[in-house]
Structures are given as structure tokens and as C-alpha cells.
Image (cartoon, rainbow, N blue to C red):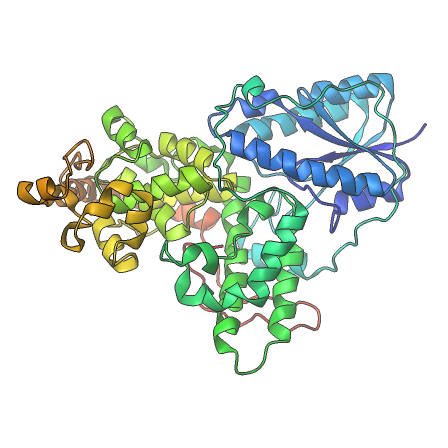
Length: 512
């Protein structure tokens, strides 16, 4: 029997699924998802990622079943699963979307490519985002992105001629069986396309009115941001359908609805930046493990401070906004971009921690962990790209700017509910008499900062800028700019919908 295998990875949907669509044109298909224990043993993997995927797979299973086929979820190393299937029931084509993942998934894909070549199986890969494999010239990237998001969407199939897996597969392993810490944030977003469409619809038709001006504060961001980042990361939505749905919404707005128009335009701009950052990892996979600009090697690597790291991950830095953000992450698996950037900046400058362990820790905290965006941003906020102006956030100033009444920090740090407004952002400075009056104790109820913020930040800046000023470091910047820096662009017209051109100037950061 002649058939093809459709390998689902981070594309957990039927709508606008180029790989499945192409496979169906060639005949019967076996729909396959592989749970790979080796990938789940990585330091960036977390139970919440796995549970979100399982939720999405359950919905995808039902959708495929309604089409007359079965989605088989198999546990094992991908190359070994495919080899077993091929030996029992030979196939000649493998269909999937391209994936820009971590180093392990990259090596896995290289193994699959070698296996396909050795067994004469044709591997047909399709573009998942506006990311170009083997991009030779960054100047051409904008046109590729425009073309990808402007192409017509592919309708979900109504009928799939399925093929049966030639063995009985046990249930998927539990997080503990994969060696994962079983903790799953109790208030994280649920997986699946139905939830994804609901969240997207509520943003486009209602919440986008808050987008401009609402995405920086941790108070307003949970509703002002689109909240679709996890659904894009795992492919419950396609980038193209999000861009085109936004363009369609823009086209039907009342001319006087300028606030929502500005919000939706800014949102599309950030969808462009979503792919811009993933392209960096696609073009240079090593940036997950080494400084993008190698002239920064040795900047922090030999100064690791375990006490500082433990205080950060346990939410005991003493800076209320930092500790509240850590608490929110543990509860929800999400944090808005401004607060994410502040966490990395605080870790990298006053706490002087190397970005790699910080990046692994935050990857596990973020439900929407997207390796390309994550590692590009971690390095940018840590000052090791060599091409970005260092952004060094003051967590006390950020608290005063974005949580002036202390509502956010009091919500996430219960002990601070007793602290008067005067001391809410520097509670360790409270006089002993006030501590006693409010029944508070230093160290027990209120963590004291491990370092003097101003002094530690000045020392960090001096180290960074001394290195940046070195002639060889300055000379190495040009190569990084040529390969990774952004290019001027305008956004495309999507069908007959209103053009998204003329958006605000691209920023070095992004929000969803």
C-alpha cells in the first residue's frame, strides 16, 4: 500500500496546514505525533509545555477523527519510530512543517534527514512562519515574509483517508515519567485550537482597543496583550491566518475608531518582529548556547553567583516588582514583555548572572516559550548581541512607572499588603517602629536586596561598556549587523483588506 506520513510537530491544527494538504493530494496518510523523551529531558522543557501540547493533541485527535482518520501519538526517538514504521509498513514520503527549535530538535531533524536519505524516503518540509531556511541575504527577508503572510489560507480537510499504525501504542507518558518536574501553573492558558480562536477573536474585536498604552504595565497587560503567543508557538493558529484576520478586522473598522486601528496596526508590526527574531536562530543555531557577538565571551561566564540566582528564582530578590513577576509567572505561565525584559536585565546587570542559566529557567516558566524569540531576546536584554543599545531597567523605577499604587506587587506578594504606600517599592527601608507596628519582620516577611541596586548597576555598566569600547569588539559588530540586523520595511497588503503599511517604526522588542 502506498501512503505518506504526516508528522505533526509545532503545528497542532488542521486549518492552513500546508504539509497535510500536500500529503492528501498524494493519497492515504498516517497522521503521527512523536513524544520524544530526549527532547523533554532538556533544561528548557517544562511540564506546562507538555500538558499544553497534550490538550492541543486531544482536540486535534478529535478533529482528525471527524475526518475519518486517526492521529497516532507515539513515544520514542523520532528516527527510531519512523524506522520501525517503515520496516513494518514501508512509506515513501514524509511531510511536515519546518521547525526552528532548540539545539536538540535541530540535531533530531538532521538525523531524520540522514535517515530519509538512507532509506530513500522523500522528506517534504513546508514553511511554518515567515522564516526562511538557508537564507543567504537578510536584505531579501522582508519580501519572503510579505509573500508568506499574503498567500491564501488552506482550508482544513473534511475527509482524510487514513492509514492504521501497525502496532498498539500505550498511553502517552506522564510528566513524571518523562523526568519533568510535574508542577503545572494552575492558572495558565489551556491548549487547543478552540481556545486559540476564542482568544484571538476577543482580542481583534474588543481587547485590541487597549493594546496601545496597555501592554507595558503588568496591571493592564493581561487583557491588553493579544495572549495568542502560546497558540502561535505550538501551531494551534497559523501566522498567516492571524495576520490576515487582523487585516480583515482593520478593513471593517469605523473611520473614527482610531484607538483600535492603532492597536491592530501595532500588533501586526509585532507579528513581523516575531518572525524576525526566530530568523536569527534559524540562521545561527549556536546563539542558543554562545554569545551572538563572540567578543563578549568571558563577560559573565566566570562570575556565577548561586546565591543571586536562587534569590531570583525563588522570588526573594527584595525588589518587589521583580519578586511579584516571578510569583505571577509561577501561577500563570505568562508575563508581559516589559516585565520579561526587566527580569532579564535585573538578572544580567545588578545581579550579574550569565544569560544561559537565566534563559533555561525562564524557558520553563514561559508557557509560550518559542526558542527563536526567547534566545534572541535573552541575549539582547543581556547586552551580548553587540548591535543593540543596552537596556538596563531599574526595577524600582519600573514599579513606580507601571504599578504606582502597588496594586500588582500587593496582589502577588501577600506580605506587602501590610506595607504603607510610602515604602511599598523599598520595604526594607521601613523604620523598625513601622515594621513592628504592622507585624512585619525583615528577611522573614520582607526580603532584603542582596546588592545595592545603584552601585551594582554602575559596576555592571562599567564592565559592559569597557568591553564594548575595545577595538576588536567594535570591529566584530559589522558581521553581526550584516547577518542579523533588521532592515527597513513596510507591511504588505493582504488580499483586498486594508493595508497595514505605514505602521509605527519597527522596535527592537515586541509584544503579544
